[in-house]
Image (cartoon, rainbow, N blue to C red; front, side, top):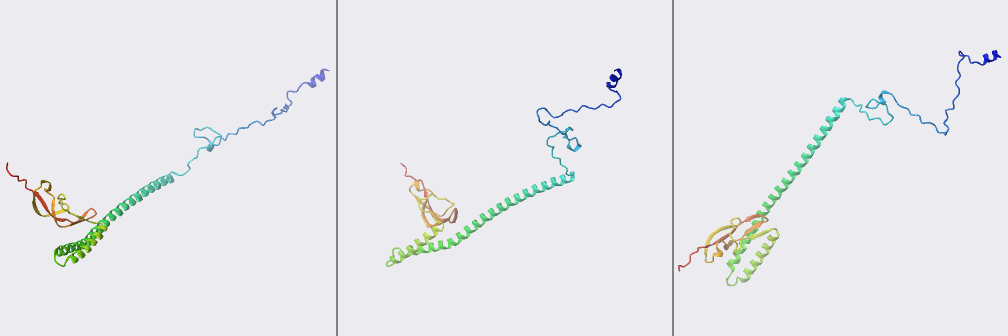
Length: 222
């Protein structure tokens, strides 16, 4: 019997056989296994490994970055130059347009002034026919032509200036004489128009030739 007990004793030199362990969870769920990438290029900037998204690395050489920076600066300067060129072009076009309009108005005024001379001649002819025997019909015909021509010139923008009673204005009136007036209210006013003046828009084509009233102020002594 002692021999049998001796046989049942474990031999310390004999290899140990591990008892199989069932790793399957009781609940039936598979355990989550977390894998950490420890490669040096997968490390975060702080030197720790992580499983989140890695930051985007700029792998361009330094000289490429410098070239891109220079290119961006050149593009910015080019865009600025183009905008300055366009602005200057617009200013030149506006200036040329104003100059062209001014010259056209000047030429238009010169042409209309030729017709003004015709009006003056018709005024003189109508004045000579005034009061002459048998010339009434001629005078009426002359005045009819004169008035029609004046209306056409007014439609073209030519406006007459200078009328009796206006305050004398050296900008539109040309004084060719002075006439003494008894009324103080008529002092420095137009009392007679010898030749009508004309204005084209804001520009004076011809000043009106007028006589100016002058109040002497003499009163009889009391």
